[in-house]
Amino acid sequence: MPSKSSVRIAALTVAAVCSTVSAVVLTSPAQAAAVAVHDIQGPTRTSPLAGQQVTDVTGIVTGVRTYGSSRGFWIQDPSADTNPATSEGIFVFTSSTPKVAVGDSVSVAGTVTEFVPGGASSGNQSVTEITKPTVTVVSSGNALPAATVVNSRSVPATYAPVGDTAASGSVNALPLAPKKYALDYYESLEGMNVAIGSSRVVTATDPFSELWVTVKPYENANRRGGTVYGAYSSQNTGRLQIQSLIPTATQPFPTANVGDTLKGTTEGPLDYTQFGGYTLTARTLGTVEAGGLERETTRKQSRSELAVATYNVENLDPTDGSFADHAAAIVDNLQSPDILSLEEIQDNNGAKNDGTVAADRTMQKLVDAIAAAGGPAYAWRSIDPVNLADGGEPGGNIRQVFLYNPARVSFTERAGGDATTAVGVTKVYGKAQLTASPGRIDPANDAWKNSRKPLAGEFVFRGKTVFVIANHFASKGGDQALHSQFQPPARSSETQRHLQAASVNAFVKDILAKQKSANVVTLGDINDFEFSETTKLLEAGGALWSAVKSLPKSERYSYDFQGNSQVLDQILISPSIRKDCEYTYDSVHINSEFNDQISDHDPQVLRFRP
Image 1 (cartoon, rainbow, N blue to C red):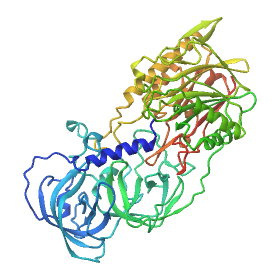
Image 2: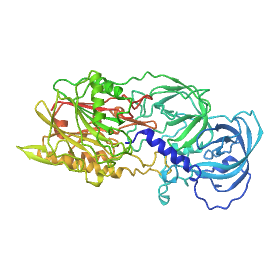
Image 3: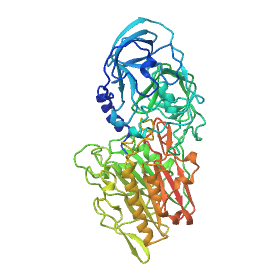
Image 4: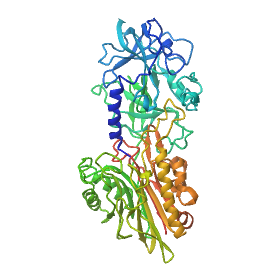
């Protein structure tokens, strides 16, 4: 999948463009009216006054945002109504730097607008705002409205209502039920001054000065401090994103890892953002208490065990400064596996789009770094893709590569494999055999359009043939967020992954049809969960089984996203390995939980005796 930074930068560009055009289209007649904030917010997600002019909207300024494309400030009416569904806070969008301060009592006139962060096509919920405002400061230095405390008791256990089928699944028009649904609860506090107490960090600080905490410390917790995402029906309602309104010169944004604690009180307006949904924009920010999380090291394979691993090295190209770190991870944390499927190896000049597709310089630099780190003299095999045909960062031509230790395993070379020729399976002396090694599976199939084609290869360990298939399925880009206005959210990217899973499953079945006892390992960045339909299609007919499911549920994760520790990287095994070979599985947590990660994925290791 593309790097988080590249996805984020592209999306920020969209957000900047959409900041003036992403409002909900309205047909109600405009008229001026003096109303309270809760009258504007109303008991649903969208304002009953959207599109109308309002005057003399009064409140106390609780936060000021002076950066980015969404400059403005929040006000809160200290005179609350009795309806828990109607928020007392609202954002005033000024576009330029606001001329108010926290504690000012103001009167605002302007247009009520529903702004969708990321644009309407994102599926995100909208934020009720007052735009094109005229602001009058009535007084300054006022006490702020008391913060609403968000904690494990206040957030409901059920994530969201089911959307209105007559409105394509949208929840926008449904009456808010803040005591029943977590998304409704957070929406009922949109724009209001909220606070959390000491809370465990469940996604590390990212390059955009954000982190995630949970206000529910026992909700699907794992031993390393994260919150595990184990089913579509379990969205982990205690997750909350934290950003800061405090100038970095006054208080730098804290650097935190999963398992640390954001200690003390964190308080500020509750916003809704494109990346993460409901976000506490801190006016008062807690401090980090380290949890002492350390990177894991797997055990060394025995002489009789074959160690096969998968590792997404996140757009690695010769200009990167992370080769020594990746080498140390492979040698020390992964204990030099015998065969390693690498995903996101870029070509020799990275994202430069000049037709270059070879990656020999990238791989030689990695192999040399591994040797310098005390590791084996690895060899490698791959197939260069057709330029710009495999998706990923434009110009980067990412592909999968087999890295293997020739002192422990041999690679069976068979000519004929190239970017566009499909590898087949034949039967020779009662054994399955690839027609090309390495070879690509079904590269002309539309399932692999603009996506990485699976790489198949034959290896021999202690006289036994092992078929290895390296994968990097289509990313989740384009899926609606968990916090989407559409509930349940649509996962449109699944369509291609389902086709890809069916293609790989058919190829594995072809191997097993030629040799029922064949040892087949299918691994890589599957970009989907162990409980997903994608995984079920890979496993169809008993051809494969996802070995991460041999771990306790609390240990099943390789990626951390918006407070959820989840499985994206998998190693699947054929029946002969599952039933007849002694095997162990390890998800080696060295990246996803840390703010100084060299990749956003954790590698996976399978050890077995063929």
